[in-house]
Image (cartoon, rainbow, N blue to C red; front, side):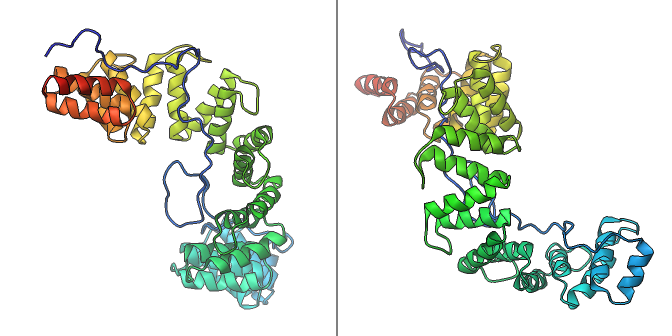
Amino acid sequence: MAQQPGRALCPWRHPQGRSRPRHLLSAPQGQRRIPHLGRRRADRTGTGPAGGDCGVGVMQEQAPDREPAAIQAAAQRGDADAQLRLGIMHLEGEGVALDLGEAAHWFRQAADQGNAGAQVLLGLMYCGGHGVAQDQEQGAQWCHKAAEQGNARAQTLVGTMYVKGRGVRRDYAQAASWFGKAAQQGDANAQYNLGLMYETGLGVCQDDALALDWYRKAAQQGHANAQYHLGVMYDTGQGVRQDVAQAAEWYVKAAQQGHAKAQYNLGVMYATGQGVCQDAAQALQWYRKAAQQGHAKAQYNLGLMYGDGWGVCQDDARAAKWYRKAALQGVAQAQYNLGVAYDRGQGVRKHATRALEWYLKAARQGEARAQYNLGVMYEIGRGVKQNTATAKDWYRQACDNGLQEGCEEYARLNKAGF
């Protein structure tokens, strides 16, 4: 069937009267991830409880530096501080052979004497299976011993274990209690985690004001996730009077530490002139930083900027490249724009079948323009076998999703008896 006059594929186009690209995904990412084991949807923020991995880092509770031989002699005499120090030396290969088994041995010697630093490190080694057989319950028990002695790092770890159900039964109230103990000692990870608990109401009564307070304490210590969440709260007016300029300041602090979602939100603010002076070059810079870390919405917006030549030299090939990255992560608008690129041969070789494939992915997510374009392709048989009934159905779906052109084409086919 020949394409009728006046009918065309629905292209990407700017809103009327605007000279810059549409940032369809420019709302601040205000949905935040609650503490939870396992991966959440990609558009949620946060990393869950901080400070709760099983990496074995050097503790601050170290004996004074001495010669390895002197430390070993003291450790063998039963000096707990020396045993801790010797374990750390074996853990790092500092002055002695790197040997995780030996490290665990000396940590146990010190831990059995009640050395809290050694108890934490031994717990982490059991948690991660470093130098010992992995045993989450043993790991939790040793961290608990240190936490009961007031060790802030251990208290944060124990809180995280209760959140994740790692070595203990999941218990959000217990988690909040341990985070609170560590937070009162100034532990930034615990302060951030306690902020999450108050924001989500897990283990405590939900309280945005307290969430804000704990985020601020952690943020002032340079905690990037806390800085980001504090920015979101100012951005959305959650628990505090809305202040987009304050939001931008906190996003900057987190973004400068490499926080991808803060970089994205900062890009949006520069693109829209909210909280900062509008600056296409700055928007491009922050979108690029987030996009290079795999942030799907930043990849899409970066594609828009290259496609439109806003803040950068227009480049269809680079636009298509970034649309593809976002499209592969499921961003419907990027899938649609990539379909348009293949349809028109913009930045990629023209390929009707690939255009159809990307339109289909976007259409299944409710993207009305993609649904309309599928209707056109099925009606004229481009990239697919001609099928008017299928075309009519796609027009109907586009109409249902608010696209006037879809309504018009559906009515036309309906009137024609299809």
